[in-house]
Length: 423
Image (cartoon, rainbow, N blue to C red):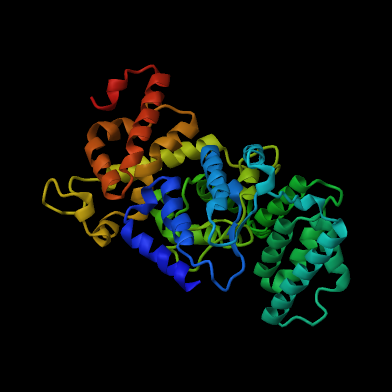
């Protein structure tokens, strides 16, 4: 749709700060207004807008706003528009859907599909994935066999996320692909529920990261590194690259790469170290942080401890890198809008920007206060103005008030006077 693309591009140019505007303003500028400009005589009889994985939005308030905005598309009279939303059936999402007039919504529950249809589709998925693996590894055309495919379909229990994780795990095994299939099928509970099945395959993948020929001390080190790196990845409020993580944790990029070498089945790990790394599916985070689900405690990540470590790392990084006039402008009073964005990107790394935005949130999630032996005491007294400059330069000044209120609430919990923040 060239015309729609043109209208959206025009809106982005006109609204330079669109990333920091409210959801409603973003919706108006980037979606509603461009759609309203389309000629009703377009050759497309219906335009479909797809929103995938709404449940991955962390804010219940934002979810409610998004669904109300989507429902407002009925006001578009010049085009025929349909909105297709996928989501796990979380309670806030279900409640928000039911607040939309019944005539404007249609809910389709995937679990209501006949199991035979789902199994047939899963069989096609496995066959297609194995065709790729056969071509890559030079396996026989009959590999791995019809019976194996049937068993994998049965074990998957109707879960495409299980099937997708399994296929990535098998493919990453290369010459050991057949052995990995056996590992997936041995010990699986065919009658287990969906959550149990995911827990089993995630555990299988993680155990594949710890090679059998490691000695006891080497295995302990691998377990520790997996917990540290995976725990850091799943608790991030915004994904970071391996390169950024290496400066934040701190670990070398090679250490992180080696730790995640066999984790491609559960993580999207780009070849370029400057691109963000993230789990393939949010269920992995749920699994890793839940001691009841991550039944092999060698892999379990203590969520509060992980947030505490990340908060401390954020503050250490800011203590190290923040300084007055970080962009070297040498012109006091320069407006942010007049500063070259490329200069900001050059002087402020993604990990430093992340640390500035989220250090307080990590302390909040850790359940600790700023004076529980945290390095934030020194930071907030000596670098407050530098932090404010960082937030302004990176376009996050609107978050400052909320961040300081959260910090103040931590001081109250600790029983300290709130003025300690700026003493």
